[in-house]
Figure 1: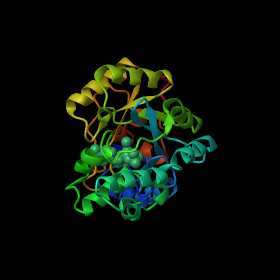
Figure 2: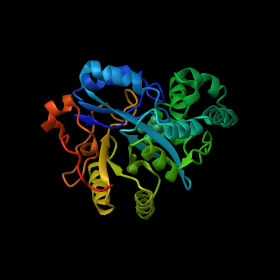
Figure 3: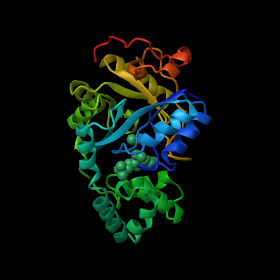
Figure 4: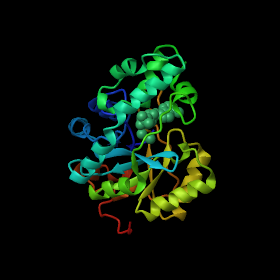
Length: 299
Ligand code: AMP
Ligand code: MN
Ligand code: MN
Ligand code: MN
């Protein structure tokens, strides 16, 4: 169990728990520093911050931005952002707006293979209807008995080349990084082990991310293997990037549980060394390794 978890979701996007319950679960599992990183939306952060203050843990304002990179969809996590920044808010709004139309197209595609009524069925699974996405559709298909679990839904229906997949235009890598930086945050390439790219293409991606100003790689996440974690730690060092770590918790059975984050290899420069310490964090400085002085490492 880790004390620092810098990636998780609430009902604001495709998580199963409201922001305050995500924070309460984190606190009960011994997490001391938590970033809530909902997809393309920061509207859970105020509630999460209040809950974190009550629980005595530190909430880092975060977001996870959906990005197109060639045929791939990438996720760029922003950490320690100002959630009121106008540039960030306008950018996020621009990529949220197409989700309902996309879900209707996915539903039409699934109807063609004999699964009718998916849009209407999945809508109640999205607490925030504007944020309807593949996870809500997948939960509906599991509960309808079409597939036995989420993995099976994604494998059979919701990934490129499958009958319910609809390509979507999000934003590009440069914009995602710029919005995060405009809001004073750090840009992290999320879960590099989950993209459908070979070694050479992954190096190209990391190089481009770094050249565009990206700050860190999410080296450790629940479903990275120990071998992947070691590889990503080496890549982070080679490309001069910091390292982040987070569970990507969405709810029971969907990626890792909160705080279930493998430790970063010692060679990594953790992103949390950049976070300004709070009075609370200072009292528990050593286990959290929060710096009293900002490191002077150039970003
Ligand atoms: P969307 O933003 O609508 O494209 O949905 C992306 C989300 O779908 C991810 O953040 C995950 O929550 C979920 N997802 C994607 N692939 C998988 C998978 N293989 N297993 C479980 N969840 C997945
Ligand atoms: Mn998700
Ligand atoms: Mn993601
Ligand atoms: Mn995520």
